[in-house]
Length: 350
Image (cartoon, rainbow, N blue to C red):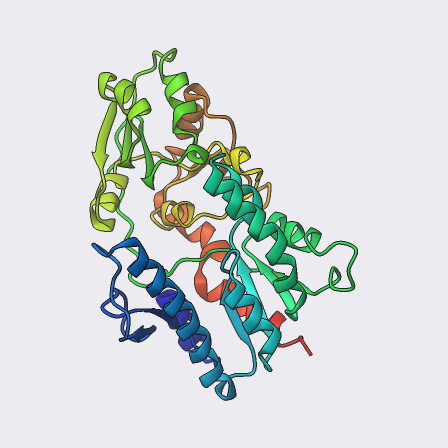
């Protein structure tokens, strides 16, 4: 969000990015609207956490009402099965669009537990009414936008204007360092390896692959995959690292990996921030999902989690300077370019 605000200022457009959050939340001060009546929920009882959640939602929408005269249009992050959100969008006088980052109903129900199924059911019933009260739809991929439109089928609202607003990244202060050697090194980063990241699929291929390479796994790995990964000398487990630590590892890597099991969320497209971080650093990407890049963009490869194919792609990319990769990707991932396009489209709304 701070990148978005910086991009708006660079473009000279009237655009404010704000995040409403509990008091003492970490983040850039120029985008935070802190609710000083609510503090972090760590170490609180469940009833207190629930009370704070309800209070935060109510206070957030009250704040939006209080600033409504300052803006012509509101672009808000969509929140699932939220009756406060439904009440807000029905009463609010200014045009509202929500930004969608996933197929909410299948994602919520993916775990299969009673709680997951209950949340999925609630979103399935509440969500369409929220969407019908907006002036349009915004999604990070075309697949997600069409999914949201399908939730309003057989209504007069399913012809709403829609816009694609993929994730972007700031190029300010970008630093390209290339320390690659002949030995292939692969980078797979995730804060927490959930099932849709497909690390387990890569582990299965590791068991039958005899190639010589090193794969750096950064993030929290679940126990069932951890057992094998710890036993393979080609795997370097780093746990959670800072951005700078990840960057330093990337300098010697030939390729970055993204998710391989989005089908577990009934999705085939994504535009993850991780992919954009790889590319900005000059690291070509091998992934198991489609992204916003055209088919002839050579530095993003859509393929299966098979190490022989990943290594082949890495060797192909080894002769390309990292600076070339980074600059070639910029037109697709630079936050300035992406925001400029969205702003131009939003000004067409009536």
